[in-house]
Image (tube, rainbow, N blue to C red):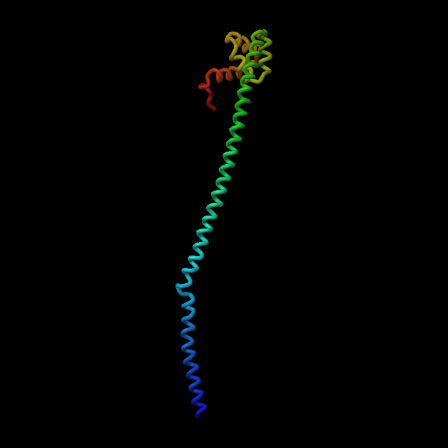
Length: 170
C-alpha cells in the first residue's frame, strides 16, 4: 500500500506540477510577444528608415544636380551652335544679295531673248528673285519670251514674293 500511496502522491505532484508548468509555459510566449519588445524594434527600424530616407533624398538631389548641370551645359552648347548658324545664315544672305545684284546687272544688260532662255534654266526661286528686282517693263519682256508654263510658274512665285498675304490656299 505504501507504494500505491507513493505512486499516487508522485502522480498528483507530477500532474499538479505539469498543470502549474503548463500555465507559465503558455504565459511565457505571451510575455515574449508582449508590448515590451515592440517599441525597441520600432525604434530600431524607425531610426534606419529615417537614415535611409535621408540617404535616398541625398542621392536624388545629387542626381538632380548632375542632370541640371548636364542640361545647362547642353543649353550652352546649343546657344553656341545657334550663334554659329545665325552667323552662317547672315553670311549666306549677304552672299546671296551680292550674287543677286551681280546677276541682276548681268541680266539687265543681256538681250531679252537670251535672258529668257537663261532664266528658264535657273532654279525657279532664283529666277523669280532676279525678275522681281528688275524693272517691271524689262521683266515683262523676258516673261513673254519664255515658255508659257515656266513663265506662269515664275509669275506665281513673283506674286508670292511681292505679296506674301496672297499665299494660295491648298
